[in-house]
Length: 220
Image (tube, rainbow, N blue to C red; front, side, top):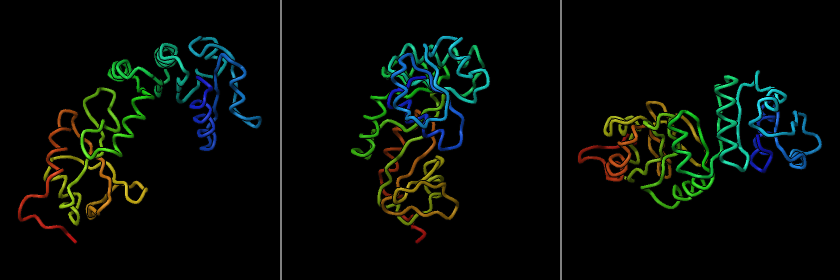
C-alpha cells in the first residue's frame, strides 16, 4: 500500500526478485512511478479498505507492506492484513518513532523513516552509542554493530564470543557481508554485528571498546 518513492522502489525490487506484486494507492497518478511496463496489479482505493485489499489479492498474499505517507493509514492497513486476512508477514512505515516502538512491541514490524536515516548516520559517525540495526518484535533482542578495539585484530571472532558472552551475527568486510565460521579472524576495518539482549548493549559497547585482556594473543 502506497505508491510513493518507497512503495514504487519496493514494488520494482520485489518484481526483480521474481515475485508477483499488487500496488494500492488512492491517487491513480501515483502509479506513474511504476513505469509503463510494470507487470503487476495496480489497484486504486484506500489501502486499509477490506474490499480494496481483496481486489489486490490480499487473501492469497505472502506479505503486505504499508508504506504510504500516513502513519494511521499504514498501521490500520497492516493490522487489517494480519488480523483480518491472516497475512503473517507485514511491515508498516511509521514516521513517528515513538509510535513505531509501540507497534514493534505489539508484534508489527515498523520502519520509522526519519529515525532510520538518523541512526544510519550515527552508525557512520560514532563508534559507540548508535541505535541498534534491528529489534526483534518483543523488543528484548537486538542486532547491533559494535566497535571492537584494534587490539582484537588477529583474534578469532569465537574469542570475542567467549570473552563477551555474545553471539556474532555477521561481519561486513570491504562492503560485503558474510556469516563467520569458527576460523574467521577479526581484521582491521571489519564491521562486526552482534546479537544480544537489549540491556546488554551498553556493557558490550564498553567491554569491546577496550583491548583484549592481558596475555590474550591473536591467531594471526
